[in-house]
Length: 463
Image (cartoon, rainbow, N blue to C red; front, side, top):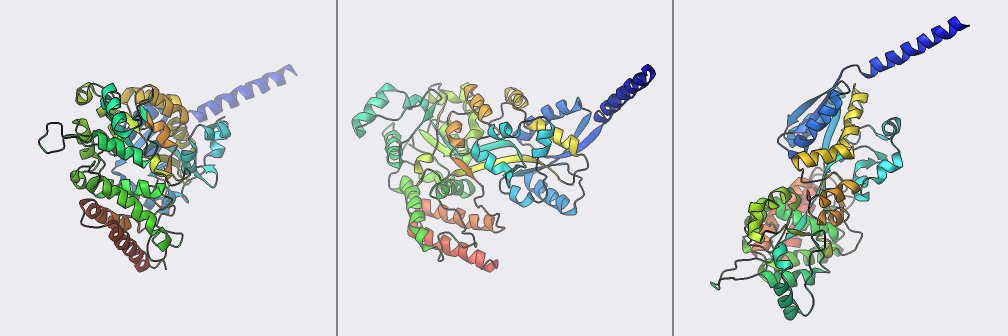
């Protein structure tokens, strides 16, 4: 009996040792990495170092994002399994839904409480990373457009006194997180008018109240932001233009929103006519030089640059305040544009256990904090805890907390990933520049873009 117990013990130990050896067997996984992008540049060293302790080698497939898109689509269609972890952004993720494997069972197997895991993300982020209620994407980058404001102007007692004397109410000021909340469009325009100034009386504006981009893609992003917050997108479920001949009931909504955008330049004169030559970099340069009281674009990207002491000199050595554009919402439930990137498990991967370890590391809050502390990533990953931590530690502007809760739609915008979306966006890009320069009226913008979008979709055979 004792001999039998001895051999049972020996056998148990052997099985345990064998299991340990199997768990530590070397594995190699191939993971796409965006060439020169700060987010993947920051994450890869931290994740690969952690996985090296588990005998897992990560081989990056490095290329620009559009080339990675085609590589991944080809690999997915061929079911080769050569890529173990996919990377995709919000407009690309729907095209990959048939090629990724849900992670719920893997998370549970790893000892993770599934409901707790889901609750760690903002609801809008969770909506983007799930397919049919199951977690499929691990978000690594969540961005949205937001505004910056010159704190030195908004917190100056004399400026506040003069504003109240002119407009009859208190000027909105930054809260403890540096966030400014505008009640409505009218209040925003009042503030923009107040800060638009010819400081040296030479007949030229030296400080613009507001600086948004008006050029091509980033100008269209502002239009799309307000379009979504008006409850619309480009297409109805059949692919018709949402403000074209098939949907005339929406034409006034679009006309009103582009009228507001045009008025800021031509009527209210709080935006420089040069906006049609500015994308996000030019907008931020104007703000950096102290020539704009407020700006709006993909501003989170500039936080690291804009909080450098030598840059803040133009604003009286103050950290920029920030604001969300949710005051333009026609209805509270409407959401603005979210740009979100994530990793997913290739269902044809031959190294799923190792690939899951990569995904678990990418979802680890503490690892993410280490990366922000080391390289100062400008954007978080959509976790509630991490987003608040970023603001508390000055890695992100205060308005990202409010902003991330008021966005959630695909960018480029469409709940359906229509292949024609980019050519449709070109229609709006071109005509928005004409609108802002005054060569196209708001009603003409609605008619021209609506009919052209309808024509593109009809020629594509959708109806």
